[in-house]
Image (cartoon, rainbow, N blue to C red; front, side):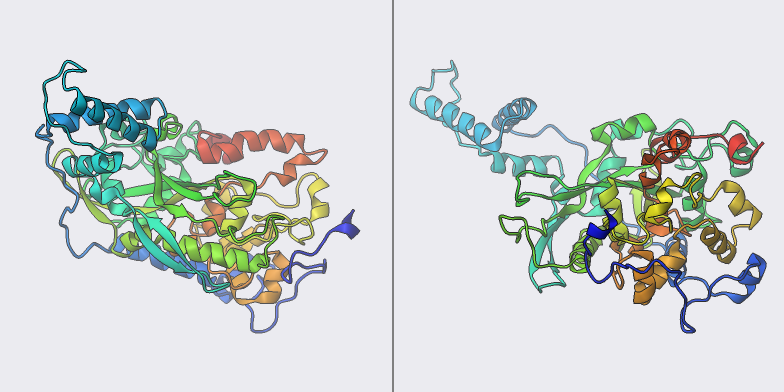
Length: 505
């Protein structure tokens, strides 16, 4: 079976031997991790990540002007506009299209114009309100015109083609969400609605054996994101974290993928787990709708692009799609006026990424093929290691961070001992082609997500993405599957485990 595996591109490695670093590469850790702390340098991507977080924590926008304060609606809309709005609500409720709405409007106005009394009305002269005209009027009346996406252009690296990416103003979207009574009524029980921080302090949380250390909205990652991206001496009421969950996945509308898009959806992580399953609390397309980069495929589904060209094209477009959020972070966040009239500085950052396995690999620059040396994106395990029990890799636990006092160099060392892939490895994959081939990652790919501050300082976008399940689908690993169902999935969508078990109490 292994002899029949086809090589994907030049990045795939048939060499199963251990990789040897050259003199100009980042040094291997010593046997003693304390020596490694003294002698090694930190990964470039970790340093960049910390600089972004430090800038976010200590920066403020130049102006504290609130650009998106809406005036209260004064009920001045004309009666005919109200009538057509009512019709639009009815058509949308029943899944009708814009053509259906326009056809109904023309039908009504035509018959009233010819026979004014046909509906027992004496309104007189009527105007035809198309759906597009009505939507523009409603946007003006309800002050939502700023939520309309603006087109931005991206040049595709592989062929120089220019594609259009509709990008929504992130700050405008955030205001729209934070001003929503429905959304703000779903703040998680463990979160203070006046600060968006956990109600229970870190020391009390750690000493409670029944506390959930992997909880989405008040666990270790949530608290780490606040530490990294907000000022330590700020007033928590007037400077608040704005952690974001992001979901992206391709839509499929035809066999040749010509109508395939990749919508980016965001959700505020301080909302409850129940609220996460309600689409009203998400904002579809807040980042953008990524265009279909495979539209040039033939009917046979073939394309002339290599794997690395595809991944570079994807991240070039994703870089543009995330531009509004990235610009907001570069300004140090945005100001929002809460319901008590307080002008609050919001600090946005990525808290977690949701999606499928193929999407996660694409977003971290991992080569996807059975012929790769390291078959999973988060660890160094080889194909033959999938049947090994217990797995040769193991996740970092809370005690690993505490024992090393969150020292970055020693954490990168222990991650390597646990067979995990950290920012140390992805930094080297970017600069060292041989190492990237050895780790089964693409070389020289600028990952768009790395330009944003996030809650995971040591593993970057890999650390805020769900783990791969390939370890779990082989014989003899059922016990690990049960643990994963409880721990791994729980880390992403809800409660998983308690401090007492994680700390071995």
